[in-house]
Length: 395
Image 1 (tube, one colour):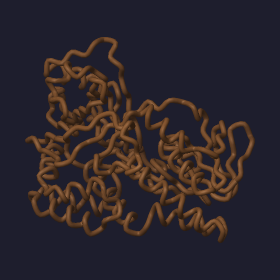
Image 2 (image 1 turned 90 degrees about the vertical axis):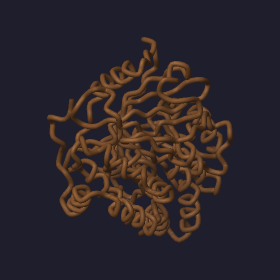
Image 3 (image 1 turned 180 degrees about the horizontal axis):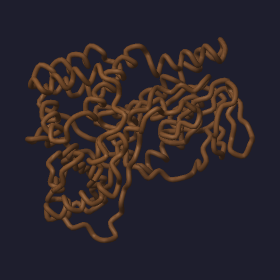
Image 4 (image 1 turned 180 degrees about the vertical axis):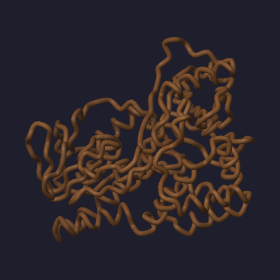
């Protein structure tokens, strides 16, 4: 086959479908291709792909955030109907060969080994296996920095004490959970159909903040606001790495969260994956006649042009600055960020290949910061990555 995509999540399905529509002989490999997706997916409304049907959008809400004070973000947040998104991407897999199996490695270029000992071959292999990255054996030298969250789905009426209908609370850094230690925030978004997700989130920590801590904090926070979820409320548990290095699998293209396209400051990657999928497919189709090596090189350049690599480096510096920050200083840092002009906030949160815009945003943040925060940002940029956060802050 021409292209084999490993991983049938949103990124993998989007890329496999895009390749198939361009006439490439495409395969899609996953241990359970029909397995439902359980995560909540969203993106800023201006990022919605033009060809995404309106039926896939479950809800839209005006974004706001609370650090030390409240801020309107200036743009709407769109929450997707996950079964509808899966059905939409699945309908676009016409002609794609679906393979059931678990990839365990790539013993040679163009070959994927499965757990049952069999092999699949393709001119170009793509690892869209998410956090597992089955085709990148590069070991990690330190504990992973991960975003974790624990959430409950409640009805709109019950959530009214936290957000008004039509609102999405992107971050609420107030310590209403009543605990000291590692900072966490409340995330509240409508899911459509009168349902709302309320989630206690640890933006990033090395190692991850445990889910029981988040569960305890969420229940305490909700109770303080007079919100009492029913005992049978559906829960959501989130855990994914935000500091993956760029995919280093030999002869393999990393895509989606495996690339990684995850923004370390938000955890978002879906919008970037959906936007890049047709571009990567077009690059593969254009260069495969010249051979697999040129096609792979062109696809890698599409995913990681120089400007995107530079911005990714900036974002990783920002992540390390956050990981090294004193817990008590985190809300003040985000107060500075949310006070930036809208254009700067938008660029930093969404523009993965706009070097000039990101430099302007970071410069503005630096100029408006006090001396201690400036020193912190500078020293974080020149120090090696933090090995691990203080274990004493884990509960």
